[in-house]
Length: 394
Image 1 (cartoon, rainbow, N blue to C red):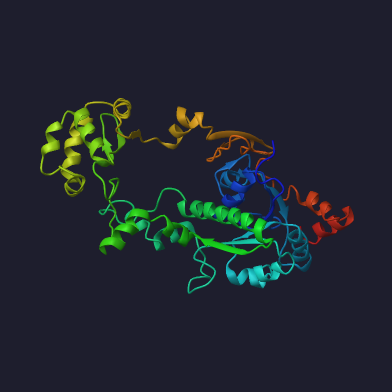
Image 2 (tube, rainbow, N blue to C red; image 1 turned 90 degrees about the vertical axis):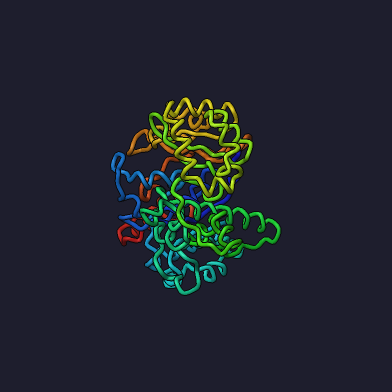
């Protein structure tokens, strides 16, 4: 069965996480992704530990379903080879700072002249123009600047970053979304276009109810720890053997929770009559709830509450996540054979298609694994390829 993006060729000039995550998502759905890497070193994530069989685990995580081609873009010969690839490409994705791509002569205005159907996607820390456009951008910097860190963690401990590179991941997802929209539009107009997104914009776009609260009241949101800012009881609660998350988002859920915990008198308590009351008095409410929860283990409460219709979940460690029966049922843990690292584990496909599912057609590539293959497609002879290698161009 053909995959949705078969026949789409993507030139990937990105490194680190946001760009590679974007192109991996597209490669999972059948696009041909040619990852251009510097000779010798390659993507910096190749040398980031921990390692599996000498291969950087961080690189393995975001680079399946790609071909690797080494190319020195700072040489005229390397630049010419890239231009040859661009002529028949559908998409180019890059995360250079604006001035760098202009210096390398691989900016959109240059490449558009070669291929008017090219969709050119720029990923950056803060955008392509403006006072911070040329600043280097990394996930934690964007988490801080976006306001995300100001509402994460506890007021006592100060701003806290999210425990994963959420800015990189959101940016990569939005870039993939933009590319797909541009491909659909090209079917109508026949023209490519320039699209861009950034870590900063991506994180601001998901501020959600925190931004809504500020727009509505002018009040600056503060970190709420593990409690929800606008619902209660809604957060993390201690049990006999650990912690669970409870999310009572409606009055009915609250009343059922009172029945489960045998605290039905609280339904008439003036401190907890409605959600606004409970939010104002959530500290006292939490103490009451936890005094009941410590009577049973987490797993017991999860079963009881979900059976009664109160959203409740265990708090897994990472090792527990990949043993969870629902996670395994949804095939969010996959394995593939790698030529150096052996059998490696990978995160599965988060979007499922019934007719044209994602698949691992290639494991993460070795550095330059497909250089020769791609150059032969461009009609380079064995002798020419060897000369390029000796010159350090590939």
